[in-house]
Each structure stands twice: as C-alpha cells, then as structure tokens.
Amino acid sequence: MLFDSHAHIDDEKFDVDRDEVIARALENGVTGMINAGACMASSARSVELAEKYDSIYAAVGIHPHDAKSVQETDYEQLAAWSKLTKVVAIGEIGLDYYYDFSPRDLQRTVFIRQLDVARQMDMPFIIHDRDAHGDILEILKKEAKGLKGVLHCFSGSLEMAKEVIKLGLYISIAGPVTFKNAAKLPEIVATVPLERLLVETDCPYLTPHPHRGKRNEPAYVKIVAEQVAQLRGMDFVDLAKATDANTKRLFRIKE
Image 1 (spheres, rainbow, N blue to C red):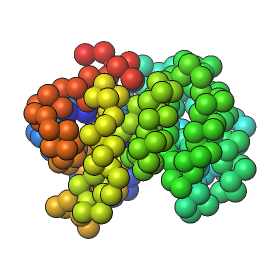
Image 2: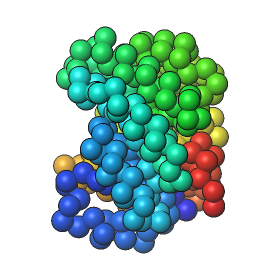
Image 3: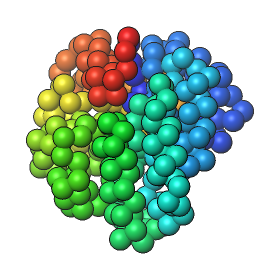
C-alpha cells in the first residue's frame, strides 16, 4: 500500500510505454499516484490522466519556470479545474532561484496568486522550492495561513523542516534520500513527525539508487519508502501505510 505523492507521468519520456509504467506501479504495490502539473499544458494532461486511470489523481499549477508566461485567464482555468472530482491540489507552485528561468519578482507574484486560488477553491497545494528557502517560508507564513500543503522533494535544513511542521504543512521525501551525498536528509527523515511525512518519485526525475542515470517511474517509490523506513528504524509496511494515509488525508482522497 504505497502512494506516489508527486509524479510527472504526463512527461514525454513516458509516451512510448505509459500504460506499462502505470501497470508496473500497481504490480509493485503503488495503489495511487498524484500527477503534478508544471504549466497549463501539463496541467491539462494531468487532468486527462486522472480521468483515464483510476489510480491517478491530478494537481494543476504553474511551476516558477513558467511564471513569465502566465496569462490572467490561467488563474481562472486553475480554479475551474479545481472543481473536478479527481483534481486534488494546486501544484506544483513555488520558487526556483537555481535556474531563474523567470524573474524572481514575477515568480513570487505568480506563487502568491496561486496560493490565493488554493484559498478560494479550498484546495491543498504542492510547493516547489529550489534555493529559495527563505522566501518560500516568508510567503507561506504570510499568504498560506490556514491552508494545507506539502513541500515536495524537500531540500531545506532541519530548522526549515521544523518551521514547515509548525505551519501545519507536510514534507515529502524523494529519491535523493537514497544518494550517498544525501547529507542532511537522513536526519530530517528521522526527525519529522510520521504523520507529516509523504514519499514520492518526482519521476521521470531524481531516480533513486541503484537506478540513478535511468528514467525514474512510480514503481520506484518503494525504494524511497524502504530507505525512509530504514532511517526511521521502523517496519517498511508500517511506513508505507502511514505515508499512504497521510497522502490521502492531505489531498482528501477517499478510500
């Protein structure tokens, strides 16, 4: 019983064998997957996947890379999609100061506007945060009071993780937890309250060891969960059940 809380199965890297990838996930005990949008086109594909496959749910949102391309009508479309039964979150949204593909001030504006959509539509959110920890926390404290959400593929410090937990938010762990240079992640994984922890693949990216260098896929969330269970000194089945329940609670997915 595993739930991949963040995937990009709509990516072109899955065009040749998408059905097989989804079937392989189910065979490996992955009973649910959330496909995260990164732009308007991928959000539309996310909705289509959720409508086609019982095991897939959709998140719709605009990644900071695409902040420079946002149209005013996009926010209206995100709100409209949010009314669909299998759309469970606004995401992925946030800030990326590593690539800076969009101006930082515009990234912040688009991020805040999408948090507003989440508030208006009573939806949880999925945060992308790369090298923007301070601004992410500041915006969440000001603009996301009372909202629920998750920082996906968490890359911040233990201190930041504690702040995120205080805000009532969740932390999701991806493939880097299996890397030899995981650095601070093991301590964070061992410290975060179990009820606030999710696991994900972020496929086709961030493939966990021992498959690094190859395409990632939802079935590999089992590898992430096994590593998290080991770091927490707990049984894998218990960790899988807990993170599955956490994902369903955050995104209001009924059994």
